[in-house]
Every structure is written in C-alpha cells, then in structure tokens.
Image (cartoon, rainbow, N blue to C red; front, side):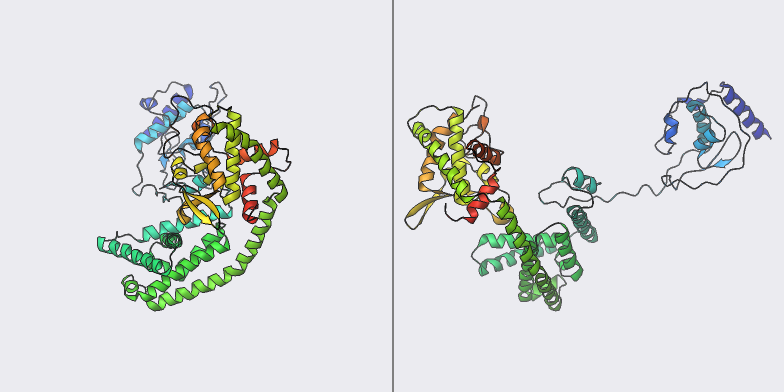
Length: 495
C-alpha cells in the first residue's frame, strides 16, 4: 500500500509540473539503451494531456531492430513490469514532455541500473581489399569500400567476385591459427626458390618465369597455402572467382597452366611435396583436374578472341586517314625542328606541335599504351641502345613503369634512327622552352624527369587528348584516341 501511495503521489506531482528529480542533470540519452526516434521531437507543453485508465498490457511483436538483451523495469506510476519503459510512459500515461518522461525513466534506472552484457558485441570480421593494386587492409565494411572507392555496382560480377575472393582469403588466414615456425617458413621459401630455378632451366625468358611465379603466388595466397591449393574445391573456387570477376578465358587458362607446371615440379620433387602433406597421387589427380578445366576454357577462349577482334576493328581508324595525318604532322614539325637546331626560341604552341609529332611516332612505331609514353624519362631516353634490322638502325628504350610491369616487366619504345635524331633535338632545345618553366619548378634535366613535358614541366597526364586535339585541328571528323592509333599501328606492321 505504501508503494502505491508513493507512486500515485509521484504521478500527481509529475502531471502538475512540480516534480524535480536528481536525475535531471544526467544526460538525456544513453548509448546502452535505445529510445524511440520520436522522442527527439519537441512537443509543445501546452498540448492537452489526458490521463487514460490503465489497461492490461497488450503483447506486441518485438521490433526487428530491438536488442535481445534489453532489461525489463518496473513503472513507478502503475507498477507494471515492462521492457520498453519510455514507450510505455508516452503511450499509456501520455507523458509527451521529454523532460518529464526522463524524470520517471531515470528513477526506474536508479532502482535497476543498466548492466552491460558479459558477452559483448560480436566483432565484425575485417578483410583486406582483394582488388589488385589496392593497399586497403583490415576493412570492417569491405562492401562499402568496393562501392565507393572502386566504383563497383552492387550485385555485379566484379563485386561478387571481390567479396568471394576476400572471404576465401580470410577463411584461409583464420584457418592457420598457429604461426609458422622459422623452419616451416624457410621450407616454403626454399621450395618456391627451387621451383623458380627449375623454370629458368626450362626457358630462357625471365619474363615468362616471373609471370608464372606471380600467377602461382596469387593462387597459393587465395587458397591459404600450398597444401590447401591441392584440393579440388579450392581449385574450382579459384576458377569460379576468376570467371565471376570478368577474367578472360585465356587468362584463366594461363593460371591453370602455371598450376600444372607446379604440379609437374612436385611430381619430380616428391619429398618436398610429402613434407607439406601432399601425396604424389593427390598431385596427379589435381593435374588431371587442371587439364579438364583448361579443356573447358579453350572453346570459350576462341569465342572471346573473336569478340575481341571485332571490338578492335571498331576502334581502328582508316589506314589512309592515319597515313595522311602522320604526313601533315611531319610537314608541320620539320621547319620547327630546323629552327630549334639553329637555337631559336619558339612559342609554346610550336614546341607542343613538335612534342605531339614525336608522340605520334612513338604510338605508330611501337604501338605502346599511352601510359608508356607518359612515363618515359630522360634517363631511359639517354640510355637507349641501338640495334640493326637489316640495313636500318633502331634505338630501343626500356620503360619500367607501366600498366603491366608487374607481370611482363619493362616494355620497349622503338625509334627509327631518323625519328631518334629529331627526338634528340627536342630533348636538347625544345624541352627547356616548355611553358611555365620558372623558378621553383622541378629540374627537367634530372634522370627521372619526364621526357615529354606538359605545362610547367610536369608529366603529360592525357596523351589521348593531345592526339585528338591535333587530329581535330587537321579536319578529321571521327574522334580518335591513342588507343585507336595503337590498334591501327599494331594491325598494320608498316605504314
């Protein structure tokens, strides 16, 4: 009875607005207990408040977003034992004022304080980004990273493939709970080193060996180790990830062929395989599975190659138009190069015309990607080596930084002797007349300075735009980029 009288007295004080609580100085919101979002909206105090008769509690369905470990508390006004006390005060007792409602709520919390769960929150498994070249590690929300950083579409093949690959890597990493001993690590290093030496004995091309080692390394990393790689499930999952990620069938065949090379090597080095728990019979089975998967990919590779050829034809420009364009560029650059040799100072537009002509010659003679042209440095140009093809003399420069450097190594830029001499004139007299070269700009004579300079002595970032602007000025209608020139030049051996 005394509790009922105290509760009634407290309720009358609250409705009259005279109740003051020691808990009003406490923060209105707590991270440990969710309140309804509607409580944040302010309600006018002069709203008519009506006290409804107390009804028996109605069992409602638990919201999906609620916490399972929410504590039940006793309402000091009616004595009911409720789970959502804030909701109860607002709906049953019509206490719409936030401060008054929290006064009752904090009194209930004094009687039964908030306790934290002993289990704690389940930590989200962090994953590394599987996209090649991305350095993002230990991501709590990998899906958001793929959407925002790599601009993937949710549900697309590349998106699904990236999530699958990340899951496989994470599973393989967590499965190996015990760290490798130094002896085991040395064994892994030694077997890969022996495998590389084995490949070098079979082929003279170091580029091919590096490509095989990179492909095997990626397969081992995705499988979580050499032992896990020699299971049918892991090999099939790898092919599925590559296919869903948009890899060409020919690329998948190259990876499987590299795996077969590793299997052949382990059959020779049976003792090394047994140390890792892989039997000779298991190696033979996996080699047969790889051969079957290659057989499946072969017709798909032919279809993809035919489709690729049709796409290349669409990106090719008319051979006669490219020949005319090249002749116009050569005719415009000839007097400008002569003036540079005489030591004259040219306007920036004239220097840029000479530079663009040399860029066009690079694209036509070697058909490189635009990134190769942009990344050519003064050191690489000065280190050019000459070679003879019949009676003709050619100068070859190696560019180390480009798109496929990781798998194919440095690529080459080839200049005939006549074009190389013109490039020497540009390097000696033209580069220093680039617009925007003032004090504070980088030294263009440095070994790592870009050979083809943009405004201010910086590296050209849009080779395709430079080609198209010149093409458009010469009156050619169809839009052209460096890729169009590259495909046309690669198809036509000589222009």
